[in-house]
Image (tube, rainbow, N blue to C red; front, side, top):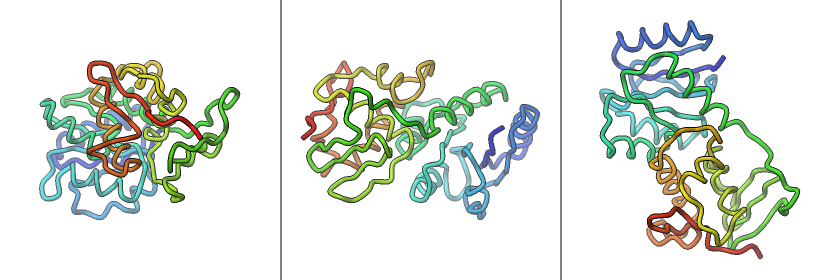
Length: 231
């Protein structure tokens, strides 16, 4: 059972999806747009299911707004299958996306996968120090806390898993599929756009200049490399 905050302006779509998810055992709280107050529902939710094409404040703006206050998993639900729209939603802070129309069982599988991989876990530290410093970046694997220049960063569970995967292999090129397996779910059949968007969000938090990254290097045609060695 997952407590879901569902933001969708189309009443027919909202009713159909809520009915299907309720039958599958989930609890769904619905809001018709981003202008209504949903702070209390957000506090009680385990996941946000967010339509992109909303009136007034659109899904991108709402996603960014949620990300300023919460690391809650977000799945964007959209009729737009265009790559630009999908990537923009992921870059705004979403963890996954589903293109309409989607059956409740498909949504149920994606919801469970996102919640599962967003659950806090303690990585193995048998062969790695519990905490390492890379330049002005400190990665504490035991507490799952990341500090930049002494200040703790606010990262989503996906971003934490991603930086753990990269810093466990400094200097090595990791493919997007390797990062999907390590930072998301070993059985997750995602695509490279999710990795690219997550890397861009992570860079905005750990790099002095995200446009000229020094920590996470893009290796075109292959994937990404973490450039700093631990001190």
